[in-house]
Amino acid sequence: ADFQYAGMDTCAACNLCSLRCPVGIETGTMIMGERARRRGGTAHAVAQVADAAIIGSKIIQLLEDQPHEKIVPLAIDFLRGVRKTMDA
Image 1 (tube, rainbow, N blue to C red):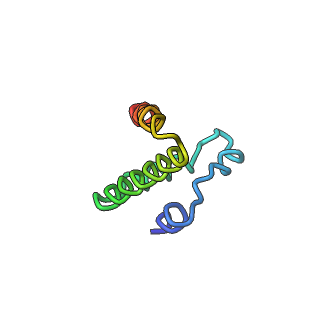
Image 2 (tube, one colour):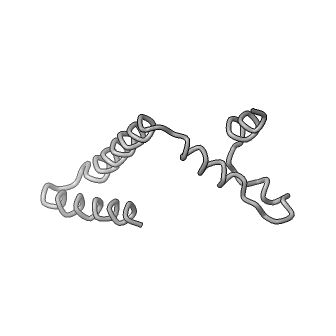
């Protein structure tokens, strides 16, 4: 119960504690992994929708004020980059 508050609820997950740790344990990375593991299906679905909205917004920013003939190639290049990042 004590770890829930001190570790999971209040940790900034910034890894600053690893600078003081004599063996360099990156507790923040562990906390982020544990938080992700504990998330349920709804949280994952919401995150996917948020990612899609961000990607859509970036596409709109990229394509605004572009001549019509450049829109499709720019969009395809952008989406290929997104796909490459997701596959990594």
